Length: 249
Image (cartoon, rainbow, N blue to C red):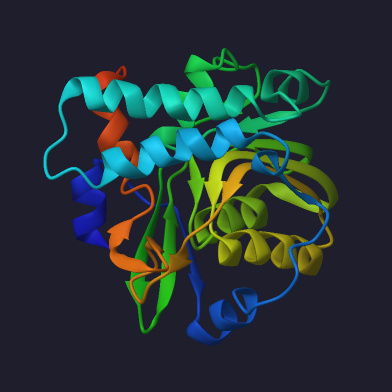
């Protein structure tokens, strides 16, 4: 954990462990519930943007022009979601979370940051005993009854499940906006929210890919190819940098 804190120049004040048997249950196959709303089902242009994202993610070397196209494709997908995040985020009493880095970058580009109740926590997953440990820093809101989360992708779903556990009260209304999700990640979020007694709607551009053993999203027929790669690493060189955050003295 110390190495992750040093790498990301932060201090994890919250640690949440998802054991392998828990992840296996959350990721098990099943029908995608109705509260997972997939934009590409009605807009084939979403899948076209995702094809651009995947192609750029698998380039041997990315130039700034590639990174800019990648970021624009994600923003285009957000624009094709049937519900716009700015509308949901502006509702009275809403807390907004946009995790570093891609969530914060997208929220800024979409015009929903700064926000009077907006937070940009660092949340990193770390392998532990066959499961995943999520470290979250101190930049989180107090418990809330209405929560909107902006993120780039859902892979395993664990970082956003950690956000739900740390911020949503039982019975809270939660909307998650994301460009892409694996089926396993979408199912995990829906199931976790149900276990918490939280009312969740997941607005997602496209659902595709599978989780590999390292919990990365890869193409089923070409597991050597990632679906998106590390979104933060890809877009941050062409997006504003965030100020460093230090461990409290």
